[in-house]
Length: 315
Image 1 (tube, helix red, strand yellow):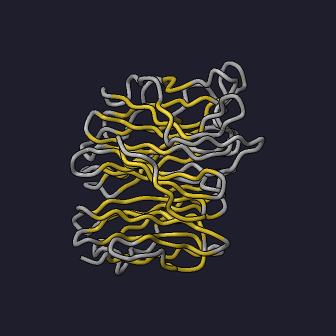
Image 2 (image 1 turned 45 degrees about the vertical axis):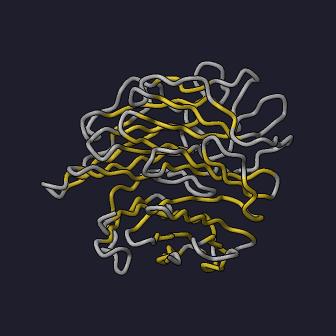
């Protein structure tokens, strides 16, 4: 919210890092973090990023199914060598992971994991030393009906000791969204809660994982896809139909909620104060972060190009 934020992206086997210190007006020249053979990319796969005052952490998965972490020391200005996060080899073959941090040096990463029975489960690991080392891997959730949805991106959010993990489940043929919550920094999780009132019976994977955030009162807000419709739900309230689309993302700036998504090769946004969605640009897989002054910054992929735009709400 101070106008600085960071960006990670992959190109073939290479992982790049860039940052903006002026609320998205300009970005630093991308720096090569690592060349990871078989880097998993595409359909919301790819490297993830989170930061603290002292470090920046990036996680990425290769096609063998191993998760690697990289740490940037802000004081020294150097990136660490890759560290493997998964304590059993080649268990994250789907290539999806989500990374979050509390801003104080504690990080949590979660992923789809095949260990023991070759069925996808939600696993996680913690770092309490600014990303320099990672804990024993812990089970977050195992579906009672064989597996969670195999090709949907999980999402993670850390606010103090509260950690939220959002994922698409698969129970009795229903591909519905669930949120598991931890109150001890990701060391243990309670039973996940289904999001929304409806259900989605589907004999396929929609490859769409949704997003979540919390406001200043720590109220959880989620956005996700069911059929071809996007829905938003705040904790304790009924779901709201937003628009047709997929791969939605959400950010809250003050009292303003920004939603972005893609549909038929175009990125759309629901901007506070606007009566209907507006076109943001051509492309897909948008992400959005809050800025000060009732604004947010949206970044997305457009045919191999990374594009970005400041979204301004109406007071």
